[in-house]
Length: 496
Ligand SMILES: Cc1cc2nc3c(=O)[nH]c(=O)nc-3n(C[C@H](O)[C@H](O)[C@H](O)COP(=O)(O)OP(=O)(O)OC[C@H]3O[C@@H](n4cnc5c(N)ncnc54)[C@H](O)[C@@H]3O)c2cc1C
Image 1: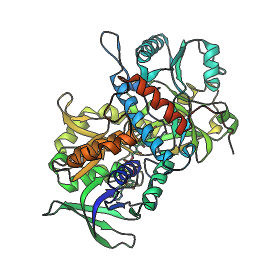
Image 2: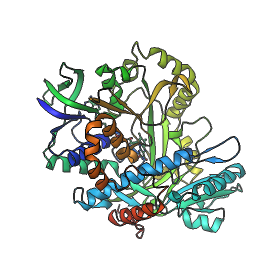
Image 3: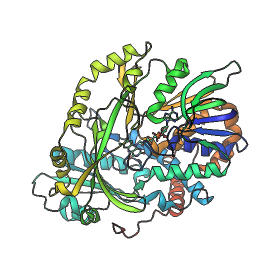
């Protein structure tokens, strides 16, 4: 079975790349191979991630303090610019009636950063100053005033007895996203455009053949082995991508390993409590905790129902996918990456210890962390749910040396552009469009010039910095806000 493009995995990344390719090269044949029975069931599923539209509006780990005391906002600016690309892409799809109603996957929701203690309050104030000097963060407010904070986050402020100073920043242009619903919508429209989507098809192996295309060994829904070939392959297997990249044998995939971090959320089962909160409130990560375990209390909209989640609690599991195997970590150690992995193992001992301790935490210990947000939280109102797996990339870097743990997203492409893999999980789904445009740039250098006018129709700011073009930024904010219906409505009632 021959095709132009094979996308491995039916998560948000393959969905985004497939959609871009169908817009840019409608005649190309695309096949999607997914080992599960539906799209968006792993990390992209709404219950498996936090649904934050990461635009660096509330995540304190995207800004750092420099030795001279100033606040470095470079990462926050990059993440925000990348999120604006996603917003434009989704607006294009809504405007072209390709993905239905926006409120089925995106909702406006204030993004709040909250800190306690003199030192943290001082940092937040300086961070606020640094961010608001940039047009991307216009509309952000800062307050230390308890009355204002009560208005912004009543559930967090009520019955708060601690005398520690508390401060917050709030910005109303934040969003909550259901990436699972978006993934399903994207695959539905791909199906309507004759993309061949094969569920219950697991890619077991792949090799490049003499004409430069790739031959995939696939176990199909009846357990038989099929051979499929494609000129271009995208490995969008989420946590499963590392194994497939290793099997491809491309030199760019050597000396790379993966470090799995599991996640858990607490979900509120009391509608009266859920009703009292309407924001995403991000706090500061504990000392020694990895950046992905920054605690946050989030209003979520999942399947048109309002929910309240707290977490994520990071933990350790050797699986690379939630539906993966206990042998995933061990089988990812290969002769070419064993030294890198051993070096990371030695370096990251405290992190591994931290994650194992987290897994062993009792519900009451987790409730105590929640009580730093909601002082009067009652155990019976909260249940634990298992979230998705994140596989952080381990590689040798100049700055970090051998076996350095990476917290970002990595695109690995072969020199001939015939295959690309996406590794890592942060900032994740929010920046999928920017990352997939990067894949197109790297793998299709001959076509990209010809595609440019269409890309600019889809993403008007393509190739431009919005921070440096404040008028364009204003136009884009206004049009995406209108198309994606992001003007704050009355907070909705909990339906259960
Ligand atoms: C706890 C947690 C919180 C997060 N919070 C956020 C957030 O707030 N905001 C945000 O933007 N991002 C967040 N992320 C990150 C985001 O969820 C991921 O970046 C994104 O979903 C990854 O999409 P993907 O398509 O690469 O992978 P996935 O959605 O995992 O999809 C990969 C697919 O590939 C399939 N597959 C794997 N191997 C094979 C194979 N061999 N053959 C066939 N199919 C295969 C899998 O079954 C799966 O369906 C979070 C992640 C986690 C775990």
